[in-house]
Length: 133
Length: 133
Length: 133
Length: 133
View: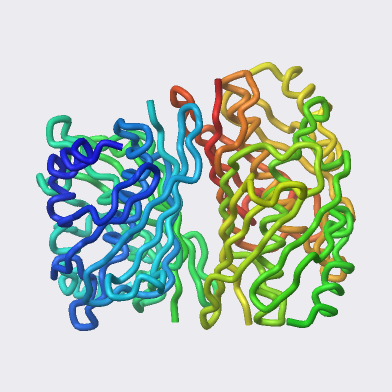
C-alpha cells in the first residue's frame, strides 16, 4: 500500500507516461486513476470516440494497481476480460479498480471506467486475474 | 474485404497511428498486422517488456479488422478476453486475427500475438465478440 | 417481467428440473434463484465440493432470467465468463443475476453465487452477453 | 498422464457420473471426452437443444483433464470463458481439451465442443485457467 512505490512504477513505464495516469485514490485494495484527454487516445476523431484498446489498457492498469496496493510487488496479468457498454467521448477518464480476492499465488480485481464528469455511468467493465509473488 | 477502406480506418485513428499498424495480410476473414517496436509501448524499459494494454489493444484491433474484412463496416467490440502467456520483449510484433463466426448481428474472432522474429510462439491469445450492422 | 412465463421456461427444461431451480426474487432486471443441495451436484463427495460446471450453469441461468425479465423472450447466451473465488460446500445455493445493459440486439448481465446461509460471501462471479430479439 | 488416476477422478464425481463422461483420448496435454446423449441435458426438449450450462461444464471438464494429464494432480478452475457458436442438438457430444501453457502455479487450456457425428463443426469454444500445485 505504498503510494510512492506505485508512483515509481507509473513513472518508469513509458506507456503509463503516454497515458498520463494520475492517482485520484490509492488505498489498500482500491484505486481510482484519472487520465486526461488527449487526441492520441481516439479511434474516431470526428466523433471523439476513445479507442477500445485504450479502455482495455486502463482497466488492466487499474486492476493491477489495486492488487499492487495489497501485495506490494509487481503482479503480471494472467488474463483480462472487458465488456464495453457505451463509448467514452472527448473526455477525461476515471478508472476504478478494486480487489475481489487475493489467493496464495493469484489475485482477482474488478474494474470500471467512467468519464470524469459522470462517475455514475459505467462505460466499460473489466475483470482480471493477476499473478503475484 | 476492401483493403483501401481498411487502410482509411487505420489512417483516421490517432491511436492506430501511434501504434504504427501495417497490414501484412488482409484477406476475407483473416488478417495479419505488423507493429514496429517503439519505446512508448513498454511497461518496463529496463527489461524491454511491452505493456499488456498494448497487447490487448493489438488483439482487439486484429479481431476487428478480421470481422471488418467480411462485413465491410465498422464493428464495435462488445467484449474482449485476453490470455497472456509470455512477455513480448523489445521486438516488432505480429498480430493475427481470424473470423470464427459471423452471426446476424454479432461476430466472433480469435486472435494471436507473436514477436515478428518467431511466429511459432504465441505470446498472447484474444477472443472477442463484435457487433455489426 | 412475466413470472409465469419464466416459470414455464423453467418447467420445460429437463436440466433446470434436475437443478431444482426456484425463484426467490423475480423483478424487472434482477432475479435471485435458489437451488436445493443434492448429491449429484458434487465433484468431490468426500469434501462436499459442488462442481464448477454446476456453478457455471447456475450463473448462466441467473443471467438469462435477468435478461428475460426485461426483454420477455428467450435470449441465448453469446458468451459467458466465470471467476471461481471459493468452493461451495454441501449447501443450498443462491444465485443472483442483474441486468447491466440492454442494447438493440444484445444484453449484458452480472451474476453472483452464494451459499444460502451466507449471502454476503461471493463464491463465484459471472458475466455474460445474451442475444435477444 | 495416468489414465487410471483420471478415471478414478471421473468415477468419484457424482456430476461426472450424471454426465456419463468417457475418455476417447487421453494423452499428455490433450484429451477427448465423449458424452452420451440423455434427456436431462436439454434446455428445450421440443427442439432438442442441449443446455448451455452442460456445455460450459463439459468444456471446463475437458480443460481440467488436459491440465491433469500433465500435472498429475487436481487443478481447480480459476476462471473459464465460453463462446457459444451453434446449438448442440439431440446428439452425443465430443469435447476436446488441450494444454496451451503450464506455468509455475497456473495452467491454461483451450477447449472445443462438437456433436459426435461431426467433429469438424465447432459448436462452442472454451478457454480456462487452472491452479495447480
